[in-house]
Image 1 (cartoon, rainbow, N blue to C red):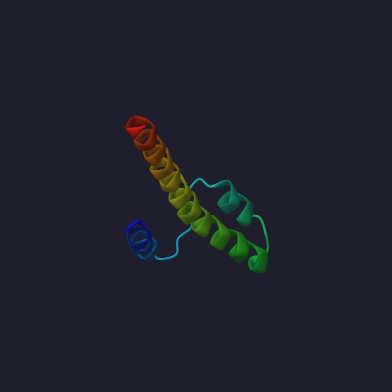
Image 2: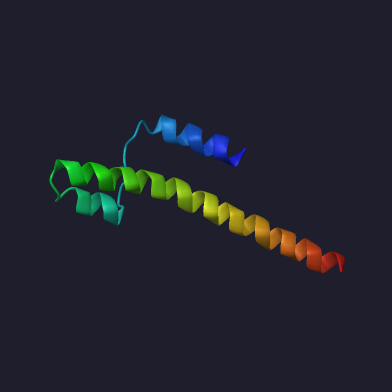
Length: 70
């Protein structure tokens, strides 16, 4: 479900890099091939960090449930 929602968000943003990202700021000063690489990396890093944060919450909740039931 999370992957579906994040994919929808990624498509709705239409490939725009995140505002205020350090990678996006640095990409503005680089020549075109490298700026495109950094912008793409910035877009995918938001996607990855969101999934990792949600996975951390799930692992924490499973740990609490396991502790509670023991």
